[in-house]
Length: 313
Image 1 (cartoon, rainbow, N blue to C red):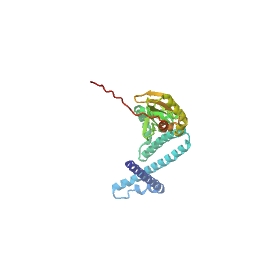
Image 2: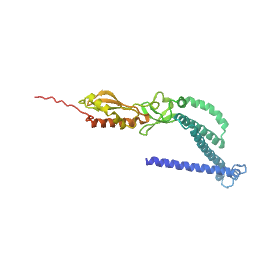
Image 3: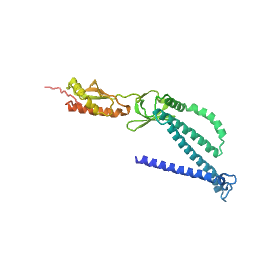
Image 4: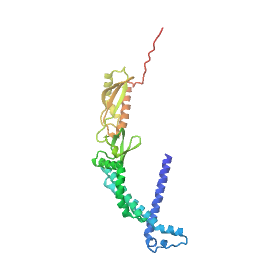
């Protein structure tokens, strides 16, 4: 945990230093524009008798322009992403669309930034863009999975079948949708574990947020107990069980015998709750039913083994 915090602190410090340098470069370029960028600027007139120093000074305009472009890019990203968040705040569907739009905008802005920096350093951008069309075709043929992920992500958002905040089960892994990006979808489960799934691989999933959930629990009773008596005890204490389960939105149902196990008769119970309370509801039901049974002399059995010995004369 400490290592993670240290890394995060170092990354924040490095980012802050880079931002300050970029800001200073932008201000210097604006204030001393003629002294730095004009044809007769001092940094271009070989002010030093050392050729190496003169070479470095001739690079100064390009370096300042590069840092200025990066600073402006970060500023534009912040402003645009803030506006997008304001526009798409509200419902989970709007939040999902907003995050996808933010992802696309970031990619586009950074591409423009790279092209601008290459132009500052003397790269023929027009030829680069023209060649990029052919290169894109070649890369596209080799990156079909990436393209499939992007297209699948767009359809997931547009169809509205998956939204940020939904609780879903994908390939047997249950979690809350944290983000739907242009390539993958992030889920976080009850324990805080994060799973990242490529959008194109999400073929079949269960969205458990659209309707109320029905968590179930299994509670065992001894074989010696009378089943009708147990049912009567539970029905008589149904209101008490509900009071002990604040996560539920309905009474607990007794659904009969689930299994005749080795050491117990397993009874099946269930109730309705909101999906985000699914696991707490199960835990509350187990505790409440066990408490009510023990108060009425119905004990939850422990594993038992009968041993038969062969008596020989």
